[in-house]
Image 1 (tube, rainbow, N blue to C red):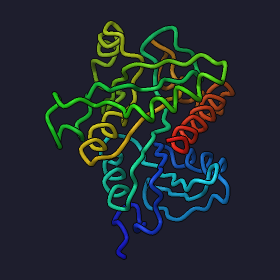
Image 2 (spheres, rainbow, N blue to C red):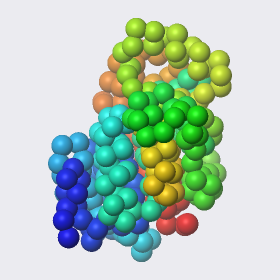
Image 3 (cartoon, rainbow, N blue to C red):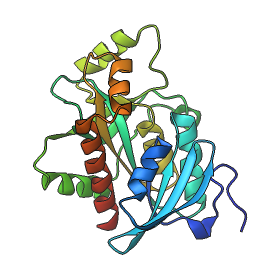
Image 4 (cartoon, one colour):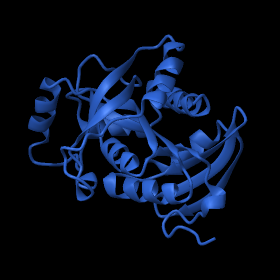
Amino acid sequence: MSKQPHLCVDPTQVAERVIVCGEPDRADRIAALLNNGERIAENREFRLFNGQYQGKAITVCSTGIGAPSMIIAVEELAQCGARYLVRVGSAGALQPNIQLGQLIVAEAAVRDDGGSKSYIDSTYPAYASFNLLQGLNGYLQTQNRPYHMGIVRSHDSFYTDNEEALCHYWHGKGILGADMETSALFTVGRLRGLQVASVLNNVVCYQQDVKEGVNQYVNDNKDMMDGEKRACLAALEALVNL
């Protein structure tokens, strides 16, 4: 069987249950939670692992930053037989009550990315699959830690000239947080018949400087790294309990 051009895997190497994440090093940390985790491919921003969790085969795939690379991963994973995709990502809060390291479970996403709009008009909704949402919520309810469920916004740049105004606008509409990939996953995943979900670790407080927040994350802030691990375990539990 021929390998996919970007992920460099074929259908014999991809499980039906997949966790996608932006950062390649996060893929390493997720794979460390698996039994017999093994790196199977790496090309550009895409790093893939296979392993087992509670006896179920799991693939982990990093997607890099933004909608275009997420869409490449979704398309090629689907071609290889993936059927259930959960994003374990990071977000910046758009509400002041969401603290560093707290999780946002995305029920739906505002489609402010360009990649998904190249597929279908923005009136098409970007929303998560109920079974996976139920699994994420069920696990997080057992953790005795605050988390949030609602709508997020996915966008294409941190550095637009009107970024402050955009954040203020979506804050006023009750949007919980912003990332760069969830809407692309939800839209293209749904168009390809996949079940999809996204759980995001908050790494920037509302109205905090983005660079300051991201630098804290890079420096392994304990609350944020604990949040990431909870997000990973929630995703794994949701996938294996379908």
